[in-house]
Structures are given as C-alpha cells and as structure tokens.
Image (cartoon, rainbow, N blue to C red):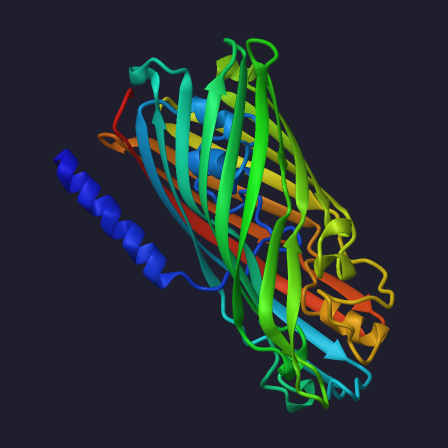
Length: 408
C-alpha cells in the first residue's frame, strides 16, 4: 500500500469514528477513564504513566512520555463497554415526582474511540515530540424512563477532548511535557424529567515529567487541572418552570507511575500507577463523590520479538460519599438529602476490583501494529439511604491499529 493510500485510509477511519461515536457506558473512575480503554494500556489495567505502550496513552496521560515515540505514528482505537445497572427506590420524593420502584437501566453499551498522532522533531534539530489526539475523556449513562414511577429518571454524560501536547528531552534521563485540551461535553439529567440534554465546552491542561532512574526503572508523574463546564438552562425549577444553569467540573488529578523491565532479560515489563482524584473541589461531583485513590497494575510479557501478552488489575476506591444538604452544580434539590442520595444512585461507580488482559502484535503488516484488550469489573452493590444500586456483568473489549512511518 502506498503512503498516500495509507493516509486516505487513516482519514476515512477518523471520519467514521467521529460520525458514529456514542455515549460511553463503561469502566470509569468517577466519570473519567484514565487510559483504561486505550489499545495497549487497556490490557494492562490502564497502567501507562511512565512507559506507555500506545501513543494515545501518552497523549491522554503523561505528556512527558511522548518522547518515547519515534518518527511519525498514527493510531486508531475503539472499544465497546457495557454493564447491567439496576436501581431500587424504596421511598417517595414527592416534589421530584418519584415513587418507589425497581428497574434495570435500558441504556445500551457504548462505543468509545481514541485517535492519536505523534511526530518527533529530531529532523528539525529539536529534542521534542508533539502529539495530537481525539480522546474519549469519560462518560456514563443510565435510563429508567420505562418505569413510570421514576418520573423520567435518566442520566447521560459524555466528554470528548481534542488534545495537543509536547514532550521535551531535558537530559538523557529526564523528559518534561505539557498538554492542553478543549473538550465538548453533553449532560442529560440527573434531575428526573426536570432536566434535558445540553452541551458545554471546557479547557484543561496537564504538566508531566518522566525520569529514568536506572537502566531498568523509570518514574513518571503528571498533574491535570480541573475542567470547568457550564450547562446553560439545563434544569427547570419545579412549580415555577424557570430554567437554571448547571455548573459541572471534572476533578483535578495527580498521577504517579513506576515501570521496570529487568526480569526475563527485559522481556517482562511491570508497571504501577497511582491516581488521586480531587472531587472535593469539583462542582456538582463533590456532592456525589469524595476524593478517590485508584491503583492500576499492569504487566507485559514479550513472548516473541513481535508478540506481547498483557495482564492487569485495578483497585479503585469506592468514591461514594455520605450525603449532606448542599447544592448539586448550583441546584438545590427540593427533596433535600434523599434527593441527593437518589442522584448518587445514578452515578454509582462502585466497582472496586477489575481485571484486564490483552494481546499486541507488532508488524502484523509492514509498518502496522495491532492490539486487542478486554476487561471485567466484579459485581458491586451499594446502598444510599432509600436508594440501592447493583452493577453486574461489567465488561469492555477493544482494539487498536497503529501505523508507523518512521524508524522501525
């Protein structure tokens, strides 16, 4: 295939992803994904802060690691994520119009896409690599409208970011990086039938570093700012019918990662990431979640020079907080704390233990690598006063194709 034909095919794939993207329902930390559905990292429990094995993980994570990608590379990744989400409401919320009911969410699984492009600047005499990406940052959704007692209860959220970043080699062992993103988000709910689907735009930035401590061990870290969103006229006040804006923020994140490949003559890569999510300063979400710690463990074993086997395990602390009387994104719910508990039941990311696996094949075709991954979240239940939630059959599968136009 000629280079022109390859670029035409890449463009067609990108356009297909943009036109067919759906709301994400899958494996999140709160509302964010943290590289858990990237082509290679998806098989390693998302572990990718210091030594990412796919370029989307560098673009969407620690920008300092962009220096690990040579030449020009383009990658397209896609995933399908699904979960059986059930809720049981044992008391009424009279002003919101909710009566006791039990139902399973009718929201189908979601498609998630991630596209990335990297280019090193060595040819221009600069020790730097730039990266551009279209990244699924987070999302989730439930729909209980089939139960009349729910009064149209549904909550849908999706966030897609355009990301640009650069990594620079400061010394032979130290790289620094920075990235910026502009994203569009869509919110429906979570205020029963008093809310409608609205969109908003928000910006975000990251700074990161990666240090080669020894021949085999590297340490990475990055800090990601909050992303501020304002959903105009997203909520109609009961009785008066006046429209109100909803303030929504993604939390700031501090992430550390350690990687080592000393064992089995360098064929076994071990990686660990630690994620701290500061929900306590995030509008709307601070009423639902407490600050959260997440731990991602990943391994990659090179069975042959061209074949990699991957495994991962994730422990994500249950972030659901004890509710108190406070506004949700600037909205004071008329039914008080029980209403806040009911909203928590629509954003219950309570799965603590997850396992993943994956396969990577380098040079399946000349200049083209392929990655496959799958993950499973163990069943989880939680109780929020008179609202109980159950998550079962939580799984995700995905793939990635990477074209390399520089050094092999």
